[in-house]
Image 1: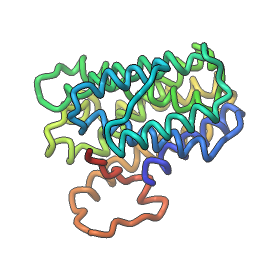
Image 2 (image 1 turned 90 degrees about the horizontal axis):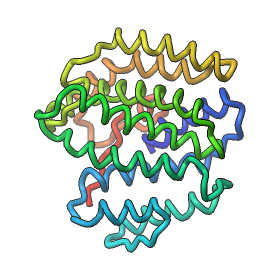
Image 3 (image 1 turned 60 degrees about the vertical axis):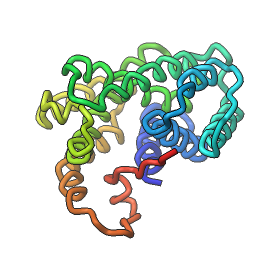
Image 4 (image 1 turned 180 degrees about the vertical axis):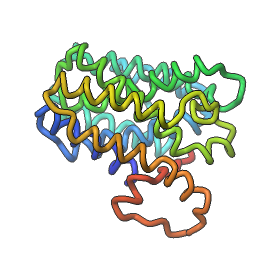
Amino acid sequence: MGTSVKVGLAMWGYATMARVPFDAELTVLGSSFTRLYDDLIDHCEREDLDSDLTALFAGETFRPRSPLEALLLLLHSTIAARLPHSADDPIHSLIRELHTFQLRSRAQRGSHMSAAEVLDITRGKGGLGMAALFALLRPGMPEAERDILVELGDVFQLLDDFHDLPLDRVNGITTSATLGVLSLSDLATRIARLRTCLAEYYGSAAPLSAQLALTLIGAPVAARDRRRRDSPTPKTDPLHLLLSRAGNIRA
């Protein structure tokens, strides 16, 4: 639910800004697939899962080995059935490229990575991930638009790293925030530049620029809230869901 609120707000903002139809059901399907896929990549220890997922994204047969994998396949099939995209649509190569960065991101569970490598993975995972989600609503996305959305997704991922900073430190996950290579002031500067790019390309940066600003402002608040979160019944109002960390699904 938390992921659907966060991703749904961003996809609605994109649809409004880009003047494309917003599909709420497709948005929830896409965000749910993303949540489950991320957790299987991070927490499933099945040796051949990586190659099986690579085959799935190449249009080949995927044989699930667990209920969670069966759910992933069902979500993938349902999304594919709803899409008007052609077989050669850029979204397919975008997802395959994203998958390679997701696999590389496993190396962030440790402190041996350089800042340059972490930033490269962050941009690939966050930037391509957001471009792929928005491409669900935009068949035939032009390369120029993709480049802008990769920058947008990169900034959102860097902000998300600040939101997750206390937990990532505890779990030994290396991110740009744990390394301290960027400050919130640095990201505020990038958001200002990005707002100009969005306005030039789409004619308006609203309402995505407002969500970026809210996420920036909420970073220290969210981190502080997580340090003291002991309640067995977390709040589920929209604001708390927006600033929440989604609970991981363990295989």
